[in-house]
Each structure stands twice: as structure tokens, then as C-alpha cells.
Length: 287
Image 1: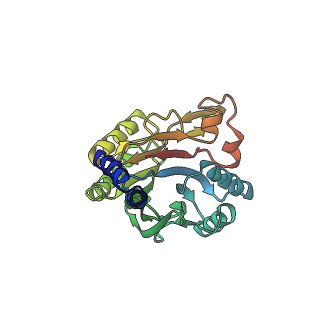
Image 2: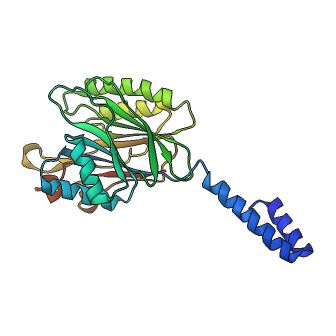
Image 3: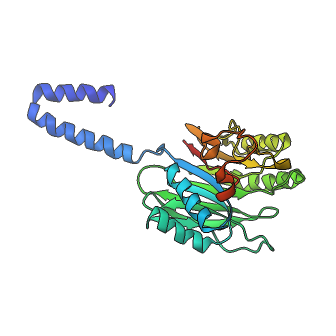
């Protein structure tokens, strides 16, 4: 409440106490209405590479148990080979208001793995979805309108080429993605770019930093020590492959699941989660 509003309130109370109560009620209602249209409402989002979903019934249940624990209304997902089954499982495990958007069908040779955006329609309405061609697998863009306060969102979900030998391929994908996102950031919408960037090297990380600079986005997940496990030579190790970029300063960015509970150096054996659910941990961010 501003100083002028406080002065007016005091004046009303001195002159007409009963009328002041009605005046105060009106002012508070106006203030609440202004808050409900606040463009800076908090956004909570996650990204989760669910390895070749659905591998098994155990993986389906374990993946959605992990998503439930995140308690966020927006989850980017990668490596989904059966979008229809994923949508059915989302409603079964999360509730009837949950939807998953995968955009138009596309041809990717033998690679059936799709990226998608899982969202709670009680919080957001998807107004548009489209695919942006990158060298290899396309990026998904979903535009969303919040049910309550807040500016519209434009969410880009990516899954860049994996493997230590494909640094230049990932660099080409990032350059193509940069051009797409640069057009999006010129508007008033809040922008989120997230997914599996397969950043296996320092060169990849330098390219991610350049992507953030070129688009004006904030690399929310830059400080995460690990987001995925792998077994070179039979020993479990970790790396930071999954990332989140936001158009506004993030309040938090956290690696969840076993990356949070068991850490980045679990020892000789990877967590059970690795074998049953995925080699990636869910990542959450809020801003």
C-alpha cells in the first residue's frame, strides 16, 4: 500500500469511521485485483529425460512417482517413444487435468524419441505448439496462458545430439536454436528453454554460455554439479547434461531425485533409479 493510500485511509477513518470500512474494503479488493494480474507471478518448471519411455511398467510408475514429488505444474520431458501412452499415464498417475503436448508428428528416421511438455491444465492452457527444425531432432515450442496472474509463457524443449564425438553437431543445433529464441525474446512473453543439452565437455559449456549471451537468457542451471549418471568402464560417474534457461532471474535451480539424495559420486554402483527409471535426474527451477 503506497504512502498516499495510507494517508487517505487515515483521513477517512478520522472523518467517517463506518464509511471508511467500506472504502478500505474497496481499496483492498482493488489491490488484490492488481496482484492477480501481476506479470511477475512465480513460475515453477522441470525437465526430465525419461530414458526411452516406456521401457517397462516399473519405469512408468517410477517416472511418474518422481514427477509427483517435484510438485511443479510444467515438466519438459525427453526420450518419449509413445506419446499416447505417456498422456494416458499422466492422467492415471497425476489426475484428469494433466496434459502432455508433443507438437505435430515428425519424421526422424529410426529415432522415435520425442520431446514434450507435460502441464497441469488447471494452471495453464496451451494456446499453440509447433516444432522448430534443428540439425537432427527438432525443438518443441509450446505457448501457454496462465489460468491466473502472470504473462504468457513460451517454453522451448530440446534434446541435443548425445556423445562425446558430436560436439560440433551440438554447436550447430545451438546456433539454429539461438536464431529461433532470439525472435521469441523480442516480445513480452516469459521465455524458458530447457531439456537435455548433452553437454559432455567444456566446449559444450562454453557454447551454452554463448547461447545465453546471444539470447539474453539466464543460465539458471549453470552451477549444477550433476544431472545424470553413466557407467564408463563399469564405474558409476556423473555429468551435468540437463539445463534450464530463463528470461528472468531464477530463484532456485535444483537437481532432484538421486542426484539430490545420493549425490554426484555414488560409488561403484549407480542408484537403483538408474536401472529402473532413467539415467537422468529431474531438474527443477523457479523464477
